[in-house]
Amino acid sequence: MTTFTCFGVLPLELRVQIWKEALSTPAVLAVTLTRTLEYVTSTYTSKLSFNMAYIGPKPYLAGLSCKEARRMLEQSCGSPIRGLRGPEANPKSTPGLCWVDFDSTVIYLGPDKDAETYMLVIGDGDFDAAVESLRNAGFRDAPWSYYSVVDPQSLEDEEMKGMHQDGGLQYRNLDENSMRFQFPLESKVKIRAVLLRSSYTHLSLLDTPDHRFAKTGNIYYPDKDLLVESFAKTAVREPSMNMWTGDLEAWAISYAYGWLEINDTALDSISDEAAKAWFNERILRDKGGLDRTTVTKRVGKKYNTSGEVNMS
Image (tube, rainbow, N blue to C red; front, side):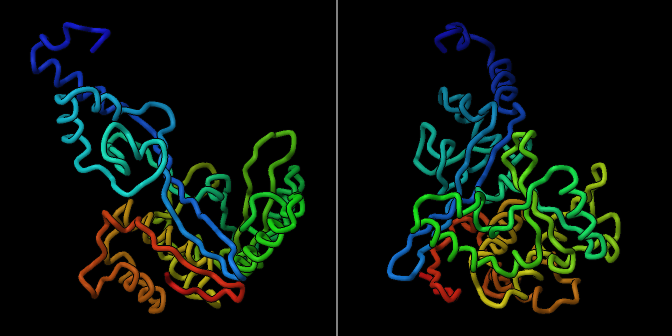
């Protein structure tokens, strides 16, 4: 309290109100998934970790200023999130803790590469027309794999080129069912646009009630249960477990189930038994359930060049 030395003599009710307003400031928290990939004797060792960073105001800092504020912080945020990395994961407390008031914080969830990607599902009958519309608007084809944010051929290191080529094999099925674009040069936007066929994602406006979508302009956003259904149906139809199925699992389980807290019964009413079983197995539904507070602690995976996966 170096800027207001009389704060401590204010009535308790007033101090409490000040803390509440400071801690409830609207904020945006970006939670991104980072993959660390190492190449050793023809085997890739891949580990996933979550990184957190507030964009703009950081309300939790007010709660770390004194014991009284800390008590108010604990009341507004409950228990801190544990086991995370990033600038918000190590405030003036135990390393790996992050304080978030979910009532006043907007959270962005996504892997690092997906934080720079717009993924749009297009009806199969409209897909070719959508591709031409983007090209006519100045969007540039990005024919390399979804795995690589930039064109691997632009890299000077031959070993890195090989790594990107091998990584792209993990996304072959996705690449065959999508078109990837860079924004027009004059826009100076360094974000990709990826068009996906609706038959591949199992998302269709024609087969789904309107109330399952939120609409902004001409873009429809599926609700969280419908999104998880899409992830599950897509994952079970992949020819093998790979990095792409790992991404789908992270989105469905770590994000939607662990963070957005969708219900265990979210997919009970669907007719796709394989997708339903995939989801239930991953939330350990018949084995006591998955602890949502630790679901984001992802184990490492080892990928070899054949696309097979062994859990480490």
